[in-house]
Length: 323
Image: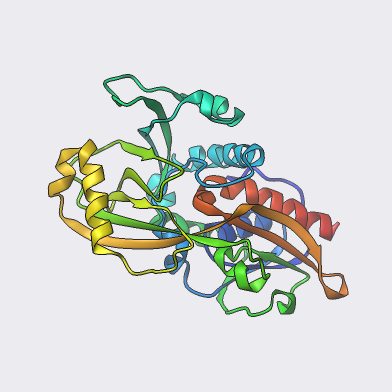
């Protein structure tokens, strides 16, 4: 059992939301014996999760003490899935978190295997060297869906306007940014990320150089379909249209680290809106008639990083209702 979960849940559940949080939560619930359906407004290949880079690392997500544990649980699962990269989309890849020091991170960092200070020849500006999961979402999301279906679950395209009207004993809200209106939760906001995908000129390691107080960052991730370049972190920006000037600036920042990127052919432009709030919301509330609504949203830029840990906690909340 790849998620490492145990315990039985005998209850009908509808998970609303077909991104990485919704699908992972559905898999964990199905593995625990729940009868689960996923309702998604659009195919999983068109969700926000499909745009992600996607490197395992706690980025723009709170609260840090809980995030560290969720992330470490997820790391163990991804390390197992990396044994079958063609099937799962997960690979373990070396790289550098630039301008980052161990003493700046939470206690979780001490439990990341092999995380160490980067040597000068690895990154002149100082940083951390690590071998971390790098996830090809074009493969991983369909794998999650297939895994869920193999467990007896069903994925249905459906739009929801009122979570309390969803016909299930337990409803799990994994709607991300849509929780702004569906809950409604006015603390939810978008943080816009723009990416450029180029032909990989032979780069095999990833790199990040992120100023968490700025609305731009620099990173590149070698994926099977090309080298993904980033990025931006624009608060409360809703535009899904790639900006040409922003794309040029992304390429220039990445090329400052690896000059060969400047000549790489552009394959694609991507934009995604990170579903951010002051802290992840993972809690259960009671609906009319004693039914339960479990919330699992607000993961910002680290939904992939914490997906399995949060899914287990959400399943625990479902199980508490079902017991």
